[in-house]
Length: 132
Image (cartoon, rainbow, N blue to C red; front, side, top):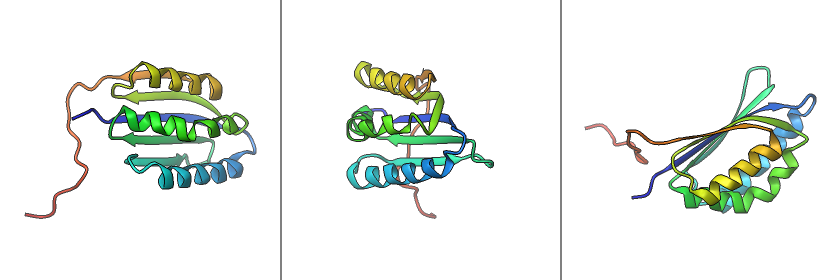
């Protein structure tokens, strides 16, 4: 079984761009939901005063994330005027090609600090068992 991949990026929202960012993210999330059936989760969170946005992606494997970068990647340049990415954390093994694409995204929207975190221990459940 291949290793799941979790990607979390955090960005500052540029002054006066909050509503535009929300609309752009809703569009991007709808596109991913319709066109990326292997992606497990794609979540966008705003802090209380809507000055920061955190995006969490959960993929069953690196291939799913690579597909996301290919399918949605062209849209990322449209976010340069909306955010300044500060951090991009990758949990799992992205492989060299995907890592390069993520580094390019971090440079384009940042410059963001990028870190890869290797799995040390754990498990993943995709279905929660019912009561016994």
